[in-house]
Amino acid sequence: MKTNHIVTNQVPPLEGYDVADYPVITEYLDRVGAADSLPELHELGRLAGSAEWIAVGDLAEEHPPVLATHDRFGNRIDVVRYDPSYHRLMDTAVAHGLAARPWADDDAHAHLVRAAKFSVWTSVDAGHGCPISMTYAVVPALRHNPGLAARYEPGLTSLHYQPELIVPTEKRGLIAGMSMTEKQGGSDVRANTTTAVPQADGSFLITGHKWFTSAPNSDLLLVLAQTGEGLSCFFVPRILPDGSRNTIYLQRLKDKLGNHSNASSEVEYHEAVGWLVGEPGRGVRTIIEMVNMTRLDCATASAALMRNGTTAAAHHAAYRSAFGAKLVDQPLMRNVLADLHVEAEAATLTALWLADLTDRARQDEQTAQLRRISLSVSKYFICKRAPMHAAEALECLGGNGYVEDSRMPRLFRESPLMSVWEGSGNVAALDTLRAIGREPEALAVFLDELDAATGADRAYDTALAALKDSLADAQAHEYRARTLVGQMATLLTASLTIRLGHPAVADAFVHSRLDGSWGSVYGTLRPGVDTAALIARAMPKL
Ligand SMILES: Cc1cc2nc3c(=O)[nH]c(=O)nc-3n(C[C@H](O)[C@H](O)[C@H](O)COP(=O)(O)OP(=O)(O)OC[C@H]3O[C@@H](n4cnc5c(N)ncnc54)[C@H](O)[C@@H]3O)c2cc1C
Image (spheres, protein in one colour):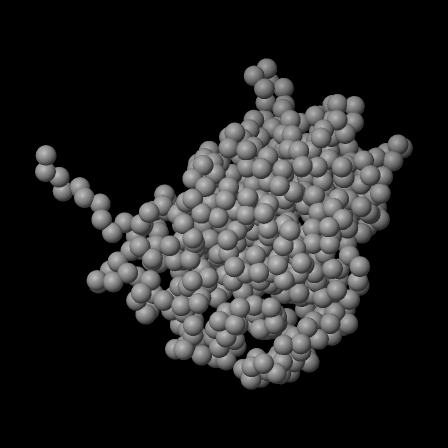
C-alpha cells in the first residue's frame, strides 16, 4: 500500500545517556579531590538519562497528588495520595543521599557531592526535589533544639524512604517540610498571625492558617508562630509521640503552573502540638538556617534546568536540518546554542562552588561569610535567569518544543518557581543589600574573592572597578537593588569562570555579560567566541 506517512528529519529521543557526563560537574569534583564520588554520580546520571526513569518522571508529572481530607466514614484523615511513581522517585533520591545525608557524613566534600547528585537527578522530575531539599535543609535549624535534633536526625539523614505516616521515632526514614507563608504575607513573615500558647509540659499549642505548605505529608514541619516574645519557630510532627494524629488539617492543594508532582497545600493548625526550636522571638533567625540551605538547592536546580534545556536544544540541533544543513552547523543557531551553554555552565559552576563553600564553611567563619553573601547574590541571579533561558531553549526545538511530549513545556513551567519561593527576586536582592549593611566584613571577603581574578582580562577588571564605585553607596540604592546585585552576581560568576572554568566559557561569559557587547536576548555573542568548544561541552553523548 502506498503511504504518505513517511517520517523524516525528526530527532531521536533524548534518552539512554549519562546526565552526569557534563564536563563542568566532573571537572569540578575532580579538581577539589572528590573524584571518588564519580562512579556513584555516573550511576545516578545513567538512571536519570534512562528511558525507564524518564518515563517515571513523566508519570509523576501526569498523575499529580490528590488530597483526601476524610475517610469514607467522615473521619478527618488529611493525607495526600501520590502516584507510585512519586514514591519511586523519592526512594531513589533518598537512597542516593540527596536528603539530609551530608549532615551525618564526615566526608570533606559531602555537601558538594550531594549538590552534584541533586543537580543530575532533578532532570527526571523537579517536583519531588522540594521535599528532598527541605529534608536536607531542616537539619541546621533543628539543631537549635539539641534534644529534638538528637532524636530525629538519624531518620532525616537515613538512606531509607518510608512514606507511611506513623510515629516518627518508629520510622527508619523521615521527610521534613516548612510552613511559614500565610495569606496576608509570605515575604514578610513577621506579619504571621498563627499563635503558639505554652503548655505546662513545655510543649505549645499552635493555631492558625498557612497559605502555602508543600509536601504536607512530611513527618516533621517547622512552623512559624507568634508567642508573647514574638515570632518563633516550632517543630510540629504530623503524628504525635503517643501515635495520635496532630490536629493539622489540610484544606486544599494548589492548582499550580508547574511542579505538578509536588503537593503544595493550604493548612490549618487547630491547637496542634509543637515544640520550640531556637529562642522564643527569634523564629526568623532560626528558620533562616533552613532557608539558607533550600536557597542553595534553588540555585542548583535552576542551573540544572538551564543545563537540561541546553542539552535538549543541542541534541535537537544535531539531528534536525533546515535549508539544507543541520541546525547545529548554521552560524546563528551556533550562536544561540553557545550562548545558552555559557549561561548553563557558568550557573552550574557557581552552584557547585557554593556547595563546596558549604563544606568548607564548617571549619572557617570567613568562608561562612563568603558563602552567605555569595549565596544571596547567586540565588537571586541564577533563579531569575532560568525562565528566559527555558523559553529560548524551547524555541530551539521549533514547534515540537511547544508540544508537551518534548518535555520542554514542563521545563518552561518549572523555570519561574525557584525565583518565587525562598525569597522572591526583589526580596532576595534587598536581603543582599541588608546583609551588606549588617556585615560589612562579608562584603570585604566577597570583594577579595572578586579581586583574585583580576589581571586576566581587562573587561573584567573594568567591570569590577565599576561595581566597587556602585557599592560605595549600596545602602542608598534600594530602588537599584536588582542592578547592583545583578552586577555582583555577574562578576562573581565571571571570576569563577576565569579561575576555575573552561577558557572558552570564561572568554564568552566576560566578553558578553561584562563588556557591553551582549544583546538583550540569547544568541548575541560577539564573533570570535569558540562556539565549537562550547557546543561540544553541551552536547549529550548518546
Ligand atoms: C509552588 C509553591 C510552593 C510553596 N511552598 C511553600 C512551603 O512549603 N512553605 C512556605 O512557607 N511557603 C511556600 N511557598 C510560598 C512562597 O515562599 C511565597 O509565595 C513567597 O515567599 C512569596 O510570598 P507571597 O506569595 O506572600 O508574596 P508577597 O510577599 O506578597 O510578595 C509579592 C511580590 O512583592 C515583592 N516584594 C515583597 N516585598 C517587597 C519589598 N519590600 N520591595 C519590593 N518588592 C517586594 C516580592 O518579591 C514578590 O515579587 C510556596 C510557593 C509556591 C509558589
